[in-house]
Length: 139
Image (cartoon, rainbow, N blue to C red; front, side, top):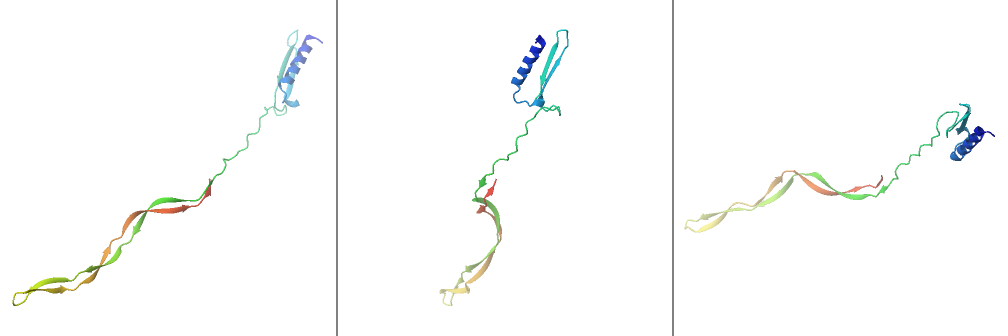
């Protein structure tokens, strides 16, 4: 066995050891004589020889983040609420005056009897805090 053959055999063995996962189609060895002493060119690829593309692992599968259950709960919220005006019955007491008789003695006279008067207060907005139930959901 000449020097070139032994060198080619050792390169082939080295290529097989360095590329244990390469398939048979992905290993190529080129031998050639470039000078009067000969020459060797060794190359290998891990891709398919028919396509000429390097082997690529498939992209990892998309896994969305895990869903988490948020339980229902009460929330305190502030709301602007319109409070309508109110009618109230207010008692107006009777009105009395002092009078004098012919002899100059003072006495009280009811000038106007007592009565109820209807008083209307105007409507207005108030800020009120209310408890609101929020349903549970998946997030």
